[in-house]
Image (cartoon, rainbow, N blue to C red; front, side):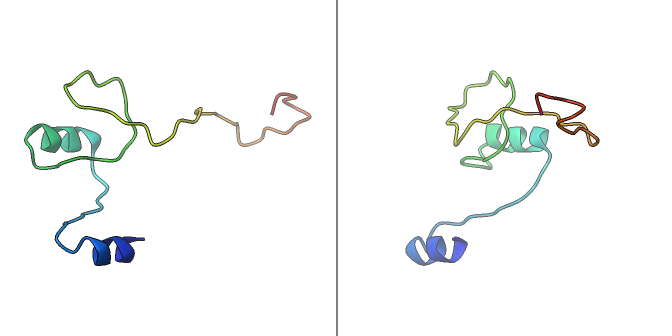
Length: 72
């Protein structure tokens, strides 16, 4: 996927990095980033947010089985 994008948009620089969310927010505020992909929280800044997808966060205990938890 990155190779295809690179061929079609050779003048666009893309860096895929895993960083601390607070650092990413700071970089975005300081115009060091154009956009970021990540998990959103309740940030109330002036950014535009576009959800790529939404899914519920579920906790399933390690030892859970249908017998011990019928809703699992």
